[in-house]
Amino acid sequence: MAGMHALANPARFQRFSARALPWSAGLTAILLLVGLYMAFFVAPPDYQQKETVRIMFVHVPAAWWSMAGYAFLAGLGAALLVWKHPLAALMARAAAPVGAAFAATCLITGSFWGRPMWGTWWVWDARLTSMLVLFFLFLGHIALSRAFDSPERGDKAAAILALVGVINLPIIKFSVDWWNTLHQPASVMKLGGTTIHSSILIPLLVMAVAFFMLFVTLVLMRTETEIGRRRLEMAALAAE
Image (cartoon, rainbow, N blue to C red; front, side):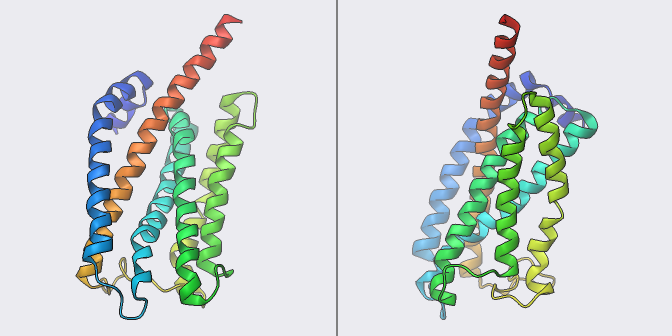
């Protein structure tokens, strides 16, 4: 907690980010190259889905980290509303578009995967619909944070939306268990252990770590941009 409070200062965060960004960007590039190589050239085709299964190596990590990204967004919202961390609003503004991009990637790749498997690009399946709601929650956060003349009011409104929207996360996770859906049930994160063979599981986990590092890198970069934008806005107000 002490470390989090220390990084809440934008100047300290920028010093941390300047050291961390080259490492996170480099690690992201390496993991993506390794993960994509394993996904396309090492992992075998599925006995039922054939080569189409390779979409999973992008689709599943994008789904995982869009959900985790929204939980992170809600945590930033709580930090802003409860502890009034000066960096929380700026980092939330940075994270929301990244989360939206991950959710969009999940939806698009899911459509390409669903077409040969289900015979259609889209169905109003519980898992698909709740993921679409997650995408719209990210867009709503982006819109609300910029909808007011006062940035503080916009950030607080967006933080409240982020906290309310958390209820959608367990719906996404458990929708395949609660309702009769076309979407396959969990096969990696389940109580009885994974049902995926290691030849597919290992590349999938490498891609999951790569997507996590990509999320971290993009949020760090965008937070730097938001800090600079806020300083320019304050300087412009002071000059009036």
